[in-house]
Length: 151
Image (cartoon, rainbow, N blue to C red):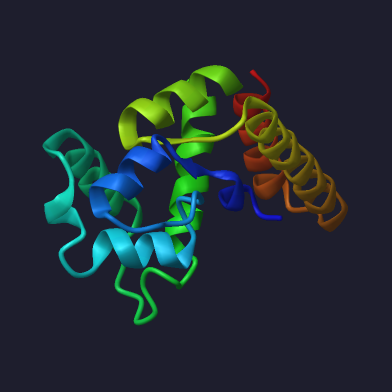
């Protein structure tokens, strides 16, 4: 299961009530994206919720792909966002708090920790492979990125 499959809409029931329909709890579920970003869905939401959803759309759903928002770019941008928060020194719980404040989405702290751990392990693999191939520049980049994520 991909990390972004574990990102959930905060106040899911309240949001479904405002929209007067059922929506999946997953923030990146196709039906959630359809409901919130097509038709008159946004006009039914209170201004605070609408602003957060528009911020989410602007930051993660804005790409030139023909298949947008089902192209994978939103998920990739969101994972980059989480990695940047970690590089700023935030721990898993603080990352959850920030994503909730910024976009009204949340994840379980253990899922964020697992994602970050996987990212570090992948960087270790890149570093090792770059060393084997004699690619010093890539090895150094992977080592620096690993240090940023490890804290």
